[in-house]
Image (cartoon, rainbow, N blue to C red; front, side, top):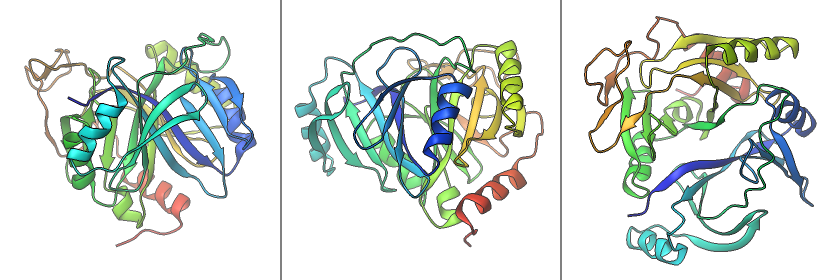
Length: 306
């Protein structure tokens, strides 16, 4: 069965490359590993060669997602499995530094998906300055057809459905985290596929408070939160990076027990056992977010579609 083990990296198209380099290096506290001949910046959270790639362009959006497969998967065999499902995938060698081989394909929204088994682990370790998250936690896609895109990741890459919020968002995972992907209707709302938000896992509440102080010192306001979500129950707060992307910093995400189909129990769970379900709202504490979301979309994409 073809199924990723983790979300390895996200590649962003970036307008303000200097501002974004400062943000990822000095504010978030990632390590700049390499700048290639095209000006792409490769950042590591602490182990892999890269978890964030910044590509200078004249627009701001998501370019590609990199998912790491189990190390014993043969990419030629994976390519054949994809072809059997009607998916065209190209096998590439040395297309990125630190990644000797990858499969490249497109999801229904046109985002590039990379599948790989090996990445160099130079292990720069965690920095001592900046926010320094544990890891790249998840990515949220603004889809033109969220049900179709969610079905693609479930049927082609064997992601597990974990929750749904109203008609707005579908949550999927490929490991124990409640979600490594959130597929929302924001693309349909603004008339184009887009990056809804990118999320990083912090260690605990004290780390979250310290992170907010670091953002404040860099004149970066919190635009929503902190609040506890319903789906996933993570405590999250959101801000904008220099390119206007929405960034989530979270703790306390639910952990799935795949063989049992429910999440490790927590005192704040509404159901025992807590299983994947439908939610009407996304804020367990009643924190309203709709205006923030629409203001963000209007600013970044200029207009709201019907």
